[in-house]
Length: 336
Image (cartoon, rainbow, N blue to C red; front, side):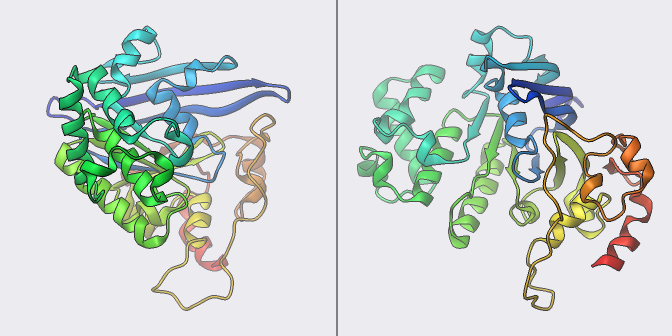
């Protein structure tokens, strides 16, 4: 929380539905959480669980789609972004809230130079002259580790490697000193060495620029050493949240257990195959009754098939949407 006790970002019952030929797709279902100034939060889950749609709703992009219906609230610094005119949201987007998109090769316009990609936001949001915007852009590129930034700024995205394009994306996102940074799969398609460099860079720049960061990923390993709090998302809902150390040590939802067991660990004996979560994620246009995870859950009972568990406190400062949170740790040990 901020010094005045107010969260920088507060989502309350955010719901996002898409009209499709298959029916109404419930991409985000009553999602609520908050982020404090300078906090690093991980939002994790399988592809298609609603992570990127949630980020798009925060930054005001999801609402632009013609087939979308949204409800709830997205309060940023006390203002509900879902009710603001588009002109006011546009002034916030890129200036106070920035996003590192999932794939830099498709997010960076291939016909624009790095110079133009970097300077556009600086001129628009900060009112800098082009010359001053170029100077700041070169400094930012140098800060994120682009060698010979003064000469490389004239290049185009295809002339950069995957890791360097990702660094350019980070530099653009940080150019206007945003207060909130959304990092959507910031290490996609990068080798492990570059992944580690990018994550260290994000953590350092967050600290130096005092920006709150939401790291969106399917890989718990990405957020393990970076984020202090983790939000686990499944089928459009937050199913577990809590401090990272506590969540990794003692998960309170079977889905979190499955995610953790699917990640290879150096402190365990080598296994020929990684454990997987059985079954497939549900069709968001035809969700099953009861708990959406029940068809894949090793603890599912009749209650799970009939009623949807609410996200509730487990008594230790954490939240879980599971009827069996109390007995999960012992049960997970049995099936390990």
